[in-house]
Image 1 (cartoon, rainbow, N blue to C red):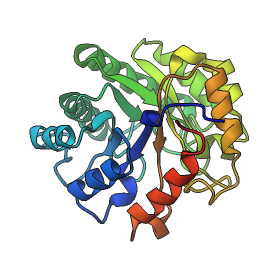
Image 2: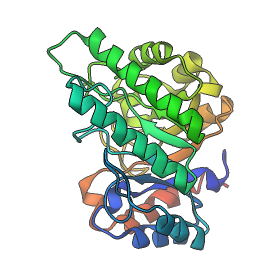
Image 3: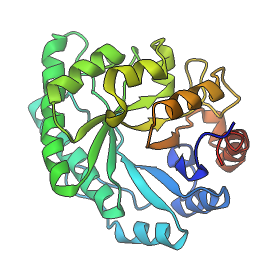
Image 4: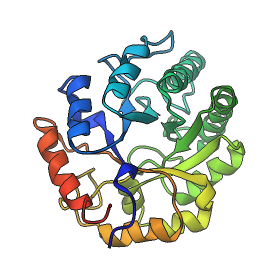
Length: 278
């Protein structure tokens, strides 16, 4: 059964790290996709706490290929900037980094910024780290009001954070932030590692608050091409369909073996997804 239009699939440039932005966009166009999620970095996608590169050339590249960037993804895992930073200087620089990511994304037409809880220090009171995360997201939500950009916060894995690594932690953060610009997203890998289901996510947050997903196969770790893991693609898509999900299905592929020839693995991925997207 086919559940969603193919235009709901979003390509993510994370596994094109060794290739130019133009190559990634050309490959995405050849795959017949219409949307991309862009990870910050070089190739015209640079921003830090001081400012950001000119987004106009990137927007032209997208428009020339009939593509849209609907989600901006600032580096926020293995990076110096994070949402629950304790050091005052780093906390302010983190805010400016993510704020510039939001500004940069807005210039490209993105309405969503991908985020997580951050992690703080593991040997400190986790309640304090959670408060810092909530305060950071509240500040960013206020900027989001000005830019018409909404945060989509995912869970991390338990090896990455002691804060929002499962539904319980993310629901706590969601309630603490308590802002209409703060929504959530499902990462299939983090969800599978936590032993959760798509239905549990919709039961916890409601359809109106789940606005994005990193939708890849896993076993349960890894971010894999569909068919390289052990998830039931039909059942997952049916759950999203039954709950009237309206966001994108972004392909976050991070297995290093994919990086040498990302287009080859993208074609494998789309061949599987085409069975369920019309």
